[in-house]
Amino acid sequence: MTAAHRRAAVLGHPVAHSLSPVLHRAAYAALGLDTWAYDAVDVTEDQLPGFLNRLDASWAGLSLTMPLKQTVIPLLDHVEPLAQVVGAVNTVLVQGSGPARMLTGANTDVHGLVAALGEAGISGGLRSAGVVGAGATAASTLAALAQLGCPTPRVYVRSQARAGALLRAAHRMGVEPRLCRLDDAAGEIGRLDAVVSTLPAHAADPLAAALPAHVGGALLDVCYDPRPTALSASWAARGGRVVGGERMLLHQAAEQVRLMTGRSGPLDAMDAALDAALAPTTA
Image 1 (cartoon, rainbow, N blue to C red):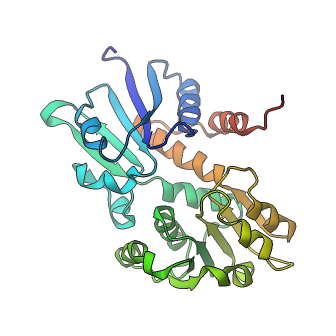
Image 2: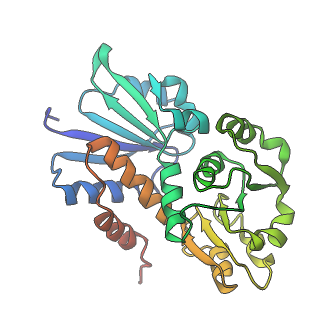
Image 3: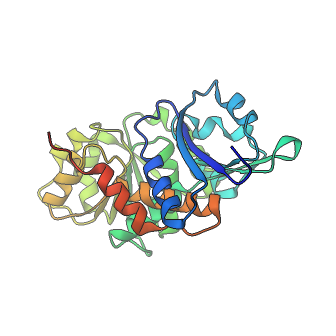
């Protein structure tokens, strides 16, 4: 690969399902970046240090998915403040090579969450909110909700004993979530202004079936497979506003494109590519 070419990739394990290549390649095409390439590379936590050490000057940046968002932090030269307090890096920017190379960690998930909620009419002055789940995405969600005006959301968890990392992140952010039982979520979240489910595929299906007859707020389900999820479909059927997790994916990827290329992510082109990739196929 010549010096005129630039490289980027999404790393994770597993990573074959990632739609990041679809989004970034569409952006490069729309921006006329014909010498840029973007791939998906399966990298485990154990393999990550070696992969980072092999990066050369052709690399512009990396997107990270699970389980690498926390593992990467001590391997970086610099971590931007937002990523530091959230405790999760989903973007690595590569500058230089050899002994002078610098790896900088950033978090674009918060940007993606704020922008996606904006599509559901949540743009500030948020009074009440709920988060379902307590994983890495939940920490980014706390930061997003605080930016939108709600630093005291309810967080619904199956086990409060497993919420330690989330609470430590909340303390670093200066937010004060209230831990609640996941079993109580169905009876409460319909009264909140905004709800973000960070549960994996189908984990929220029992919650979907138990929702009350009417819900009044907006729901962002970060899971987008199936599309719509059972929770999203149930929420919409009960009168609530819904934004799919693919919108978060779109907006966080556009911000990654901006950080890696120095040019604004072309949302329309990326959105069209994403919609085509998620369109149901027929035999």
